[in-house]
Length: 276
Image (cartoon, rainbow, N blue to C red; front, side, top):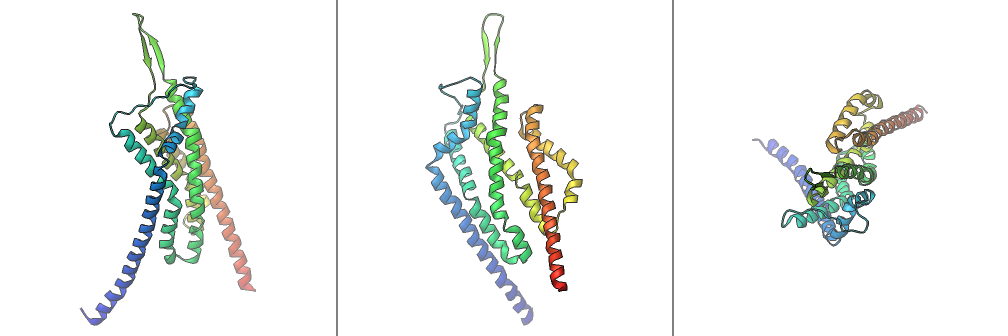
């Protein structure tokens, strides 16, 4: 290998080491944020648990199955409830530290972006947590209550021929209940990122409103499949899931159209200024 080749290898190695060092710093900040949030949320684990089980409590009260009586959930593992609470704490820590994690990701890639691309990505830092919160609110106040009402409606008491009564009661396992709710919050929180992601892609010219309009039929199929996987197996619950999700898709098209109009207006202003 010649001296020129050695110099070229060394020149390319220096930026690579700089990028790796920057990546390590950003990862340390992001992981540190999760650790600190975990330590804080650990002291509020009972409050977090009560918050997430509140839809079940309210569903039981609406079904007139309990007023001020005890509410039971099942735990079949010696360490099951402890691990469930630790998962809850980690789940809360990830949500609390998400703004810091998103900022560290943006700060790492921002130096390699053009000015237009940076301006397109910057609003994501604010809009993404807001849209995730809206998805979580939808799950907490709409999706979970409907799913729990459906489950409680399956409770029956059947009289046998010899006078005995068979009671079929809904007693959810605590880990399965919390797992379902946190999974739905993550799924819908990510789905509600669609307007943010598509508007960002529209600003850099990757997607257009007409392109999304032509994909409506495929979007309906995808939304129906998503609702079938997450909603209880009845048409009403699936409809409750599908309607707001399709509205999110239509809002995404509207946002992309507004982004396109703003881009055309900026281009017109720039053309006039250059002509002058």
